[in-house]
Image (tube, rainbow, N blue to C red; front, side, top):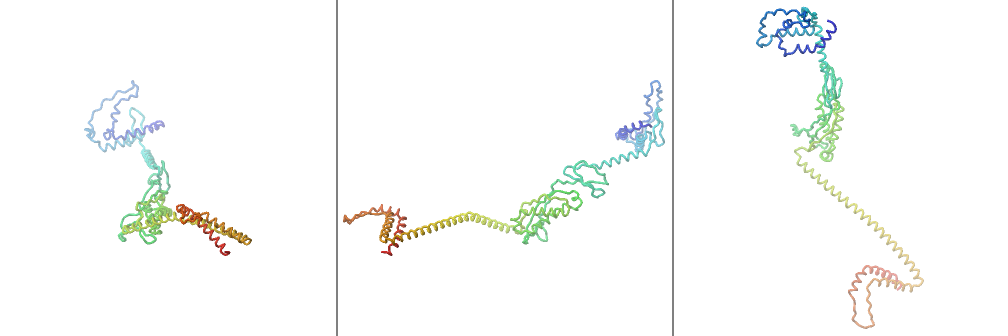
Length: 440
């Protein structure tokens, strides 16, 4: 068989395979049609050279397995399969005894070669086996490839290929997904009668804490191979971290003052422990549940009373602070004003005293020169100062009448208006009296 015939056979090989192994073929197990094909005239010869058709052979009844629509015989099915395989790979009848001559005087076909068929089947099987190594990694995933159970590599999203099973296999891991784990349950511990979420504080009190840990994977290889049960490891690390944080706080601070500081401290401590254990986890956040930090149920009522008292204390403290903030600045301002007024009054009195002393010294000098004149002058000045601010009633004594008319209404108005100046007049009269008495 020349090269062109081999190329033609390879080209029509898929069609022949589909046709020969078609399960809908009614001729399976019912013999071949070689006799029918040989009885057909050869149309390839010229019209003048066509041989006369042979006489019709005697019609023989077919086996019972081919009549009445009964199922084919298994032996005949096996023979048909062998014959079709022989025709596929060798082009002959497949009887294993050599190639019979072709119909109508054609060239004899090559005998069936079992080695070529086995090699072809093995090649197809190898291609199918290699094709099982293709896989797709979705966005947000990573594929960890292992070779004979040992870590080989990590690949990201996309179309990838690995050596097929059992040499290599892969496992998909979601690395961008936010996972959550609840810490602290309401299960009662029989030995203590407390919940599993109960823990001790620094002052040896008991509080119950419930929260949720949100995390995502940072290293797919570490998540699969560094820990036997990474999910349980995250929960255990969270419980250990929260007990360590709460154990360094007092009950009052854990329940009220520093309650908001528990979550960030637990997160930082968890991340450091997980990094040290190489779990491949990044802690995203700690969410304290509603009523997540609370005292045990047995003392809840008493604690509520204490909490209310503390709140009342804080309220009174805030009110007192607000009152102090209002009063202290005003008192400080008043004190500063009084201090300034006293300083001004002091300066005024001192200056006035110094002026009076200087004036007295000058008057004394003049008095030594003319004592009587100076006394008269001082007396007149004092009387002028005294009588200038008082109500005066002039009575003419020369009439000799005992009935005097006094305008009391005007006198009272004058008294009320001159009350203050009278004080200064009294002071002047007293000063004049002290000045003149030693010389009278």
